[in-house]
Length: 85
Length: 399
Image (tube, rainbow over all chains, first blue to last red; front, side, top):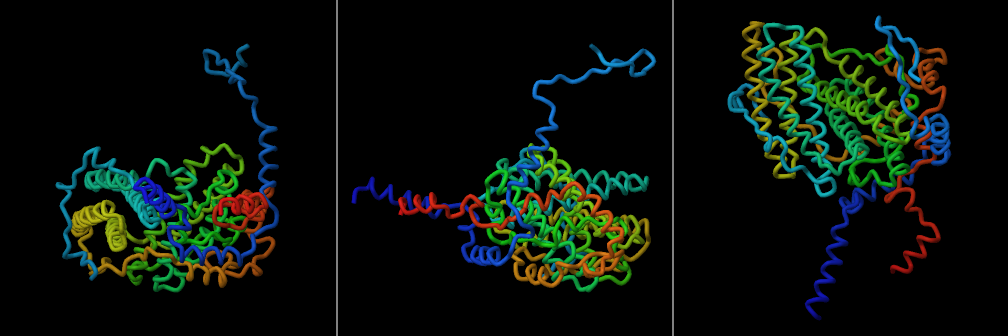
C-alpha cells in the first residue's frame, strides 16, 4: 500500500474516533440514557408547532423595523409637555 | 485521608497574588474536556460568587470587619474570575445553561444522598426533581430552536427526562420556606451541604436573569423568565434551611469552610491537569482565608471555634453520574408538593390553596415550559435525526 493511501485511511479512522458527540464520549452510559428516554412518555402532547403559534403572536405585536424612537419634550420646570414633531 | 482544618494552614493572604495573564488563562474545551470538569467550574464560580455576596452584606452591617472583608474579598473576586474564565468562548449561553442544570442535578443528588438529616435530605430531593425538569425543558428548547443535542454537553452522564413539571413548581412564598437546621445540633456536613446548594442556585438565578433577554425567540425569553422565577424560589428554600441565629462571624467562618470543602472535593475528582492545579492552589488560599477569619472569630466572639467547626472535612461531593438515584427519586417523589414547610402529595393540595391560586394566575396565558416541550422525547442527534425515508435512503447510499 502506498504511504499516501495509508495516510488517508489513518485520517478516516481518526475522524471516527474523534467523533465528539455526547454519545461517543461515554458509550455505556449512552445506552442507559437512550433506553430511559425511550421508556418515558413526554409530559404533554403536541409538537413544536405550538412554539410557532406563540412566535406568530409576538411578530404581530412587534414594532416595525426602522421605526424611530419617540422623543418627549420637557419644559424648563421639568414637566413633560408633549412630543417633538 | 480527609483534611484537618485546624492543622492545615494553607498559604497566608500576603502571598495570594494574581496577574491578568494568570487570571485569564487558557480555557477548557467545550467538547474535549470532561463534562464534570465544566460542572466543577460552574459550581465553583457559584461558590465564589456567594462568598462575595455574603461578604458585601456582612460589610454593610459590621463596620469593624470592613477592612478584613475587603482584603479577603479582593482575593475571592480574582479567584472567581480565574475559575469562570476557564469556560470557553464557544460555549453558548444555552449550552452553559445545560451545564448549570447538570450542576444542579448531579451535585444536589450527591448532597441529598449523603445528607444525614432526613428532613434536609427530603428538601434537597424536592429541589432536585425540579431542576431535573428544567434540564428537559431547556434541552427541548435547544433541540427545537438551535437544532443541537444537549447531550453534547452532558456526555450521557445525566438523563433528559420530564421531572416534576415546571408548570406546577410555581408556589406561593409561604410554601417555599423550610425549617432551618439547628446550628448547635446540626452535623457539619448539613451546614456545608446547605451552603453549597444555596450558592449554586443563587448563581443560576442570576445567570438566567442576565442571559434571558439575549434570546430572540419569544419562547426562549418566556422560558428563561419562568425558570429564573423557580430558581429564585429555590434560593428562598435553601437559604431558609440555614439557621438564622448564626452570628455574622460564624456565617463567615462557615462560608470559608464551605469553600475549602468544595475545592477539596473538586481536587479529588479532577482529571484535567491544569484545572486540578487551580483547585489545589485555591484550596490552599481558602485554608489561608479560613485561618484569617478564625483569628477574627476568636478576637471578636471570644468563643472556641471547635464549637462550630469540624476537625476534619466530611467525604467529598461525588462527581459522577447519579442516574440511578435520580430515577428512583423521580419514581417515588415526583408528585410531592409543598405546604408551608412540609411536603404533601399533589392530591392533598386544595384547589384554593395559595400555591394553586398563584400557579393558575402565572400560567393563565400559557405555560412556556409546557409549550416548548410539547410531545418532546429526547433522542441522540435531535428530533431531526428521526429515521425518515430520506435519511434511510442516505444511510443505504453511504453504507
